[in-house]
Amino acid sequence: MNTLRLYGRSMAILIKSQLQYPLSFLMQTVAQLVMEGGEMLALILLIDRFDRLNQWEAGDLYFFFGLMSVSFYLTEIFGRGVTGNFPYMVRTGQLDTVLLRPRGVLTQVLCSAADPRRITCIAVGTVSLVIGSNLSQIDWTLPKILLFAESIFFSFWLILGLFMIEAILCIHSVKSVELANTLTYGGRSACEYPSDIYPRPLRILFTVIAPFALVMHVPASAILGKPLYGWPMWTAFVTPLSGLALFGIMYLLFRKAMRFYRSTGS
Amino acid sequence: METQYRGAVLGGLICQFFFGIVLVAIYRALYAGKPQAMPLSHVTTYVWLQQAFFRMLVATDPELLDKIRSGAIAYDLCRPLHLYGYYYARILAQKLTGSVLRALPMLVFAALLPEGWGLCLPASVPALLLALLGLILGLFCVSALENITMAFTMRTLDPRGMQGMLNLLMMTLAGNILPLTLFPDSWQRVITLLPYAQLLDTPIRLYTGEYTLSRAPEALLIQIAWTLLLVLAGCAFWRANQRKLIIQGG
Image 1: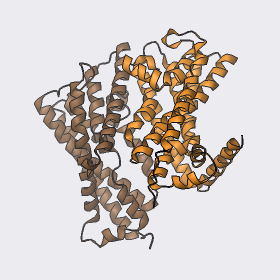
Image 2: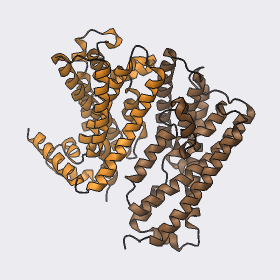
Image 3: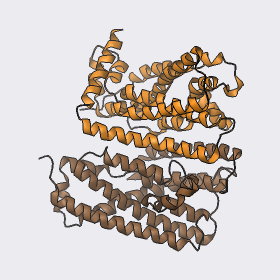
Image 4: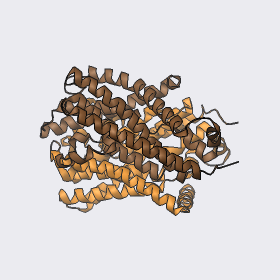
């Protein structure tokens, strides 16, 4: 509990400190808006040209897109320590100071950075969710609301877990590893669309190895009333847990990797 | 320089392959539902050529930004060089080596993919030659664009606002996120005239035959015109900056 309070206070301070340069902050958030807006524009234009993607109609596609951008950028705002800063900390030897303090390494890394600029990306995602929900005429019953919240919550852990792969690799090899981006940023781009449109190898990758399909697409398609892979409704409540499971595995690997950490600073 | 970090290059390549495969899979699924006038093989070719020459689009020279911010640019000012020309040549060289090194394995891979997934053959031999010419002009054009972005940084000292925005705009309007050929037909006339379309879109359309041989001279002329215009604008911008430049640091 104490750790959570510490994390909350760190986040408040970090966000406040970034707001000290309002103009720079504004420019950067607008830049983020252009980026995510560009992605959404691509989706709008695709829907304009093709109308639908297999059994998924326009509204469904907006919903999947929005779910991905909200969860992905929530992780980037609150998990910036892992998603952005960690390789830098290892490369410069800053991690040494972290090791001296009487707190967990991961806690401190998570407390070390926040990225509130991404708020505009979340705004774009929210707009997409609302459009999708309206077009697909989702009837928001209590179970569906719970399912939605559950999906976002576990997506956070899934994406954080995937970013930890990069953290683990960079402890071993110091040089930053672009390969890990395949699963994180590649996963984000690919899983803006429901995973059943992909050929089998990619479907397996996004269901078993990086379970975006289990954490996002199964609950989202249940909310839309078009179960993914034809799985029954109740599975949608269970499968998102795999996000936390993936994070758990990565956490254990991370602790193991930390024993190999050799300082690079001077 | 590029060959010194083989691991990073390989990692980047695998990442690009992956993005390419995912995009192709999406377009295949879309085409299965509603085929378009433009054949699917042209779309997949567009995707692979964009992925192969992606390096041309991304900003390359973090060193200059550091130099401007730390004040080390004073050394460059002492050199008996035309500053704009010097940086233009640097950017051009980095973009050329960076993209050639990545494009070759990428294109080989894309050509080996099964029918309907990979790269199609160029429309004709002259089309291929014209596409190559277009690509070279695109390289000159993108270097001129980047020099203008750099000039903004000299003013604001922060690469993340204005430049970040320009770079992101470039990704969309150069056809990296979505092929320009899939933009609404009514937009085509305008977006193909923008400077961003001159970088990769024009050479790709020449390659696939979207621009026929009789239209090629017009397309190449637009590329040349933009390149000249951007170089002149960049030169003037740099000269104005040099007069106002405050050397940071001490």
